Length: 209
Ligand SMILES: Cc1ncc(COP(=O)(O)O)c(C=O)c1O
Image 1 (tube, rainbow, N blue to C red):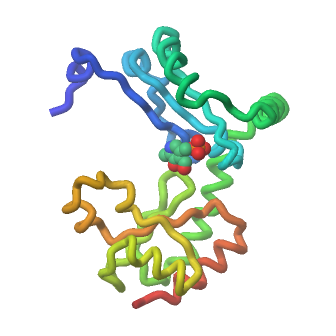
Image 2 (tube, rainbow, N blue to C red; image 1 turned 90 degrees about the vertical axis):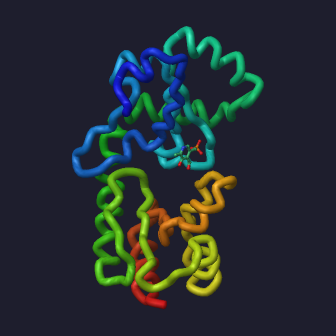
């Protein structure tokens, strides 16, 4: 049973990865730890400029925490990360100042891509639930293959020239049973040009073996 007192009475801190905080669809609201004072009091909320500003690879992010926690966090962080690329930080600061409303458009921007990708796959052999957030769509292939997700991902990359992420790689490597029993699901990224999504869907719609 999980009641509110469970965490309040314990020496627990929360590391909340909220990098997709603005990529959320269908008018649902992101439930940040920052919204709940009791939870935020013990939280480190991390996010990424890479996801919000289409700059994946720049590796610039941020951590929000109460003053007492961030004081301790900084002592560790300076030895873990050491430094961050200054020109990229300045570029992001300029963009934030000039375009403060950018993040408000992000959900709609990616929702269009999700809808396009899902509509193009509706007659495919995959089954799926449209993604509720992030720029990834999970596709279930159990109808046409019993291969492990890692094997199918490699085969599709080699033979069909389409890349995906097998979700079992996110599992605990020590839990061999969970990996063996992983659902037959691959993860596809739809942060792509519409023409690329159309080309990908053409390939995916041909798969039934
Ligand atoms: C859930 C999640 N957290 C954190 C990250 C890291 O983000 P970045 O590479 O922009 O720092 C990623 C990147 O893919 C992610 O998917």
